[in-house]
Image (tube, rainbow over all chains, first blue to last red):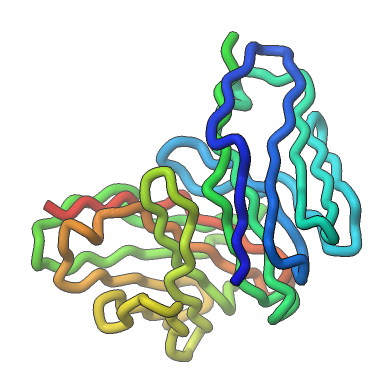
Length: 115
Length: 116
């Protein structure tokens, strides 16, 4: 059974700092991995999607890496801003079912960026 | 971009009553929709997957007679929580897949259900 773990559960940093969020998964048979952002009481916004054959994806100040063989992904946020404060969720799509496979979510890392 | 809406965003109901939550894809046709439940500080848990025009597929442990899912059109799915109990209080999030981009899932803003 696939399990997704995110460390740390919560993180507080001063504005401008670079930071790394970690995600690990137990079954390396994944189709892809996705990072989401969730604001309090809100739905999910997709940040980055990494296919299983890829090593990383970048969007603006965000960079996500994937090491499928070791079951790990990191989300790097450069020059953090107060507006980055949110919960960041990591999710893997099961290989079984291909693009139709289920998303398995971690519990998230709650990030607080203080001005 | 693809937008998924949910209504209501917040609902309070009394124990024993039923409540319906709507999920709509606003600018695309969703052949598949998903319903998730999220408890505080917990991850999203998939409850069921529904394909337009057919019965929903429920995840293990989810009571299909309690959580009724209807996906009657390509833009609308509904989740009805029947005979609600306080333990059903949770954040319910729907997600939809655009049939032209099957590798993407778009998420709604969620519905906060509180059962008193």
